[in-house]
Image 1 (tube, helix red, strand yellow):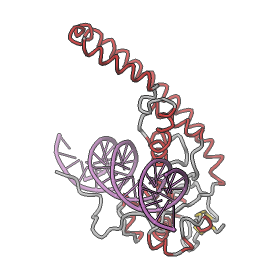
Image 2: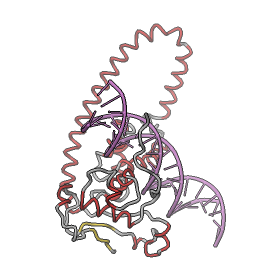
Image 3: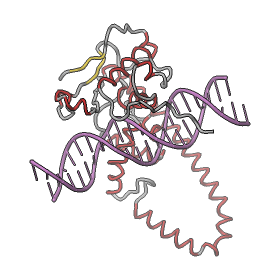
Image 4: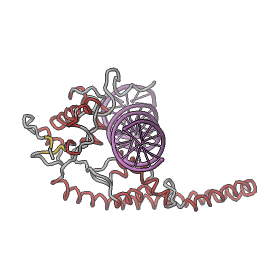
Length: 255
DNA sequence: AATCTAAGCAACCGCACGAGT
DNA sequence: CACTCGTGCGGTTGCTTAGAT
């Protein structure tokens, strides 16, 4: 029995979000919080599916998002974490407060991978490409004599598995230690940065938007920045619910 | 100026997982 | 235990922009 689709796609809007849609979503979430993503578009008056709203909020509208390009230091940390965690982007992103998994994944696919290739490192294995080729050659050679060595391989495989298990265990311990120390660091960062955070906003535009030159994406001046007038950017959802909805605390910052 | 190409990124899709029934 | 539902995640697509020719 197949699953039902996450939403009835008939009549739903797709593609880039307009400023108006962003406004509706942000206003709704800020005033009501998120109980159920599926209900959000209906209650907010949006012709989008819940998934799309969730994605837009997480990747773009969340008040605690950090905007701007990733620094070289952050890139290096991504490489280090990728070597340890692989393509677990959300896990990697959790080490970078204010960064999204999508952002890091995009960065990896568009820049970091190439950067590693350029310096001769395989982005998948994080080993030097030369070394990888060598080991592949060795594998081919060993395949040729596979039948002869079958008995040896069988007897060795168990000890290899034991070694691999021990390594995996050690790696997991290191990971936990690393994550624990990072949690502390992240907490300190959040405490230090969160209070004065201004969320830059860089919306995408629909065709209708592009008609109006004042909202052209090429016009830096027109790129609005949403910011809280009187509310800390980092606050719990239940605090949002207590706010007076007459006081519209998102405003468009003109530069 | 026009066209082509590559890079960057927002958004979509399908699957997996955990909670609830 | 089997199933549904909501959500999160990773892979992929397709649009926009910038740079090259």
